[in-house]
Image (tube, rainbow, N blue to C red; front, side, top):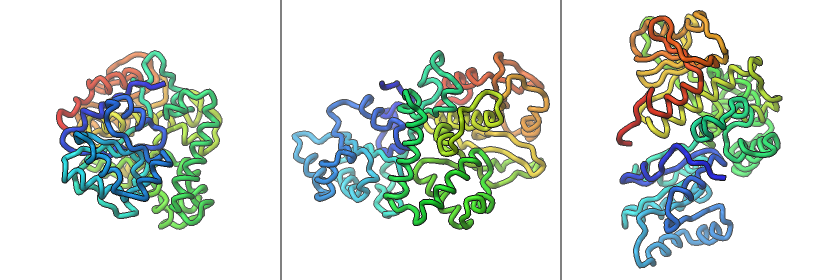
Length: 391
């Protein structure tokens, strides 16, 4: 079953080619198959016979395209990281014929490692993410299902999501890590992966995580870079503009999907008001904001704010929004401490609490208390941030 996504690929194909990146099974291929015409040449490098033919003759694709009666304006190469050397041919076809390419991949690591030609600025990048609230549908969306199963399409709607999540993590370790020889010591990386999952949504402390995983600080940094390169995790930098209070500068990090975190840790299903719910709820809201920004406002940076005096706001969006996430159905003034301190900086235009309350209200003059559904509706309807006119 294909679900309409909140990203229009052709809208992003202005004058340049496109690297379409994202974790495995997030729907990159399905999106392209459903949004492009059947006439668009589609080279799927997961097709073993095709991969063998092209890897034996890197010029084969160029020969096929140039032999057509009319050159195509657009060509897709799926899973380009399997044959990064093919980018030289892509580069040549762009320069020679002005063909635009969409190049999909689940890992930037192999491309970077090979030091291959990344098209000399002739291609933009777009990140594809798991499903979001409005893609699932307001009436069909279930918060605990989203948190526990995650939002990878094939797993979210699976009849055996626990087995599928275990398989997903196992495949990641087998293909992305072991087969690509990303690390020499797979047991050490597996220990690190579990410790990192325990710290999901936290400020990165390389020494502490390394000690718990029994690896050095240097190796810990290398392992985090592998998570980023293989799209399994991402960083949220610190917001440093505050002047009245000294901010911390170390980034936080999140795994790309809460279901994957639960699978790595082998946790029982998360329940409302349980000790883990708040952290998972925050990570889910982080996913929604990040996805919206990647699809519609790439000019805005997503940060967090924490001061040396322990004032904290979960997310700062550009110079516009401060967003505090609370997994509670009743917000008190105590929950506003970080937002009040942030508002005193007089740098942002809106301050919001996203929570489990059922009604929207305003407190302390202009701080909005929003049920998470209302927040997500406003976000995706461009009521909080206007969409970018030109990307």
